[in-house]
Length: 365
Image: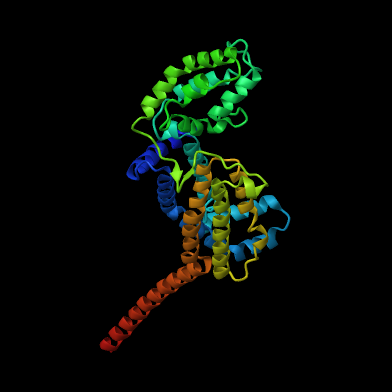
């Protein structure tokens, strides 16, 4: 379903990566900036919708008093009022829906860079993945004598634990980028403890080596650099409470995602206070989304967390600028100024007509 969006976005991301020496992080940052700039008109439309709601609020209050608990008549009257005033009931929802769809699409791009950014055939990826998964001793497979230990060692070696299959492409990138012998080394040269187990591993490699070669050939020339200041954005930060001994530099990604959302929340609250001094404080909710991002960030590849950082800083600050410039009170003031200007023009024309008539009357007399 999302391929309608993912495929063209993948071409754009691939193009941006090419501009920055195939750097994934730079492509994500620029892509996020471009998308948020494109969405500015929708954000402005959303602000105008909010202003329209404020403008007709006194009339809505009158309708509520008039119809009381009669919800059916109230709904019909409200719909008629919106029609007369030219107010869209969905004006504020559309930008949110579009942003949600974009977020899902960008998540897919980050999780499937081979398919969407490098043009690798997904069938080849699935063949390799499904063949390796057949090592699972709990499944019906053709590798007679496969042991659970062999399965676990091979799966962990490739980074394809069956509990986390969504990032198989990111792990596959690690297995073919700059080290084409990884599959062969993992499945044929590693000692699994017995000759029988080692022979099984060789049979598995024989089954997948042709498809691995196809992937490597398609990927050649379209390699993507997932590094960011020494961090590998294809890897998932593995949190441990023993911070002193288990600290990983990759933890900085979810931590910065948390801090960036805190920053944009503070800026947004400040802007809302400027636009509407009487607005209720939202301090109690300020930590909710950042904490959720921090928690989820330790279970997703660093590339996803990096997108959240870019989205928070770039998208949040642009949105704050739009809210500040197109704040409800400022927009109402501008609308009122336009109305007064139109009224003044009308009165000036009427006065001019009146003076002309007086002049003509004096001349006749």
